[in-house]
Length: 624
Image (cartoon, rainbow, N blue to C red; front, side):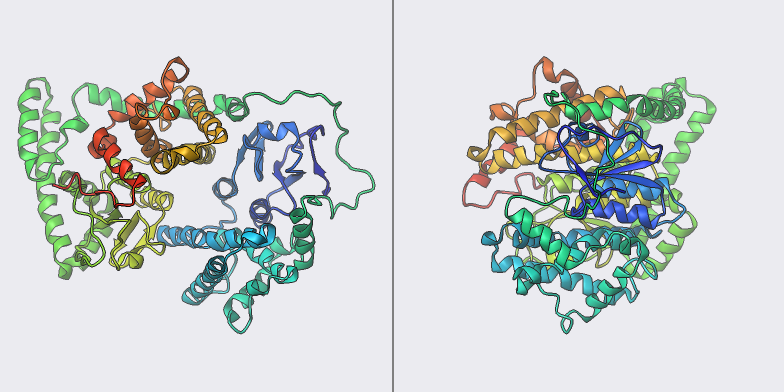
């Protein structure tokens, strides 16, 4: 394949009936997907892109013009290395690159996240050395130490096991580039063999992996490219040896920029998404019919309010008895009895550690039944508004059930809370003051951040998306992510594309004076993109007839920005232009999981106003 990087004015080569990856030869993120394609031995073509003079058609496959982007069918694409790689691993399962254990899968994702600080330090050292600070070098070595320690703990040749897996192929492109820094005079970034004996052995093993070997570039080559880019003239084609480019000739100058870059890619996929959603709707229709015939109790009347269960059930029973069949009456009575018995059983098994083996046996024998009964019985007793623990406060004793370390007003932690509520999972909340953190928080979260989900005593997973995907895999009731790899990829793309909403929110509450035209334009594009996706799916929610993964992952920012609209003109998304988006917000506000965790608007504003002062916000405004 040619090493030539196509640029503005170059035509898109004809589609060759194989997967096609758009990349840049020196991009570590694009290399991640190349390695996965190589490791899984999937036939593919690649096209290299000049990222300073991007060809117009790249925006059809990647709305921001970033690489990698994968054309999985002619004219249809997905982007972002992690999204692409998880798609590939699910779509082509013959050579699986992920562990089957959900906990190990989550630990792999956390490890990748823990290396992001080292990656940022690399970029600063390589391309903006005047901004390099000693703390960045310290962060870089901390990342290397984490990888080495994990190799020691796992005691395997590769992080994945005896063969490399997705975690190895995800972190490798940066390890490959780290070796170039000493050649550029950055000796403080050297990976000293005496200090990193295990890591250097791992690096040499990775170089001999066929998937890596086929795409590997030496430190000298990387250093040469880094130098060219640092001087402002990146030599993208330094490896291209073709006398004549094998690509098609350029178009004539004057081609207009493509319009609607954020929506064109997804509109092309509308037919496929609607077809998949139709299949889901057919299954859901049967459930709707049963509900309308009063065979099942509506969510608002579920017997899930702890000791209030009998009262709720009795009220429901009195209202509906005359309209129910004998089967329906028996169904309700069985639910009442099992909910009460499971409540007592769960309290006993989760309150006394001596009974922990019994609880594990029960869950193993009847995993779904036990969890569902216990969740219905306990869910209403979750206290979201407990006191936020601070420095000096003791860690509450672990009681055996899922525990989330939370901050009541944190949008990232809210993601995990919404998933737990939506899936009827029994859990408890420990609120922590993120501005005055208790000393023990770093034992529960390596970054000292929330959310962190404790699944067993001192066994925690963190980062909101990691926790939610773990929850969705382990607890099978009401799946939030689609089983279809394409729809799942698009759901993750929607979450990724909502990034400008995060930026706008944090700037509004902390430093509104720093908001730029670029921030405003990106924010509006993201809102329009979300609305276009809703329109293309023709459903009330991204998840179909009830919220799913994408809905709960973007909601915390929509909730906050919706509350800030009256105070900040920049945040507004009202009027005819955003009609569908406002209908969506109204639907989400009525969702049981959202409504039960909703913070009153006046409280949100009061908390966020405090961020502009030097005082700590009063996180306990809702404390009961």
